[in-house]
Length: 222
Image (cartoon, rainbow, N blue to C red; front, side, top):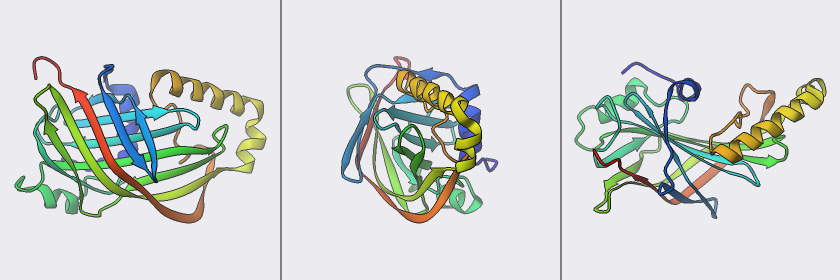
């Protein structure tokens, strides 16, 4: 597998993938002690599975990227090693799972929450190489279930003064449109601050995900 950064993958997904949108898909997780729930979108991108869940007030989004080596959807139960969210498939990470004895593949997680509206400040979390896992199960009632507990590296972002000033009313209008699209569709429309007129702050912290569970309804042929 060629190295493919999480950021590049996410950009490609907005263009190249088809979503499986089903009402019986569910996600729930405690994030820093607060419950986050939603209806996840289940996307296909070659041998990758990409699960994205958004909610509003405040805008927030949780993404789980998980990769097996079968060239299609991942249906094999087992443990998937959680790796660095921005550098997932490095040689070192792939070496840890190459014998398929302990791990079935790798996974990466990203979380974004708006901390000052309208999208002026963000708190962003990426998974790291902490030897954490996502457990995948196939249930008797026809679901693929993901269970996770992990710690993300948190960073804080503020909109640059220059972006606010020079963007003016047009930038504000675009942000409100993006918020509306995110809230209506469940997809993260320009919710990422990186490279979008925001400055990363010096403060870093940890974002704790506990009791995470995703349930995706399997298609009849699976």
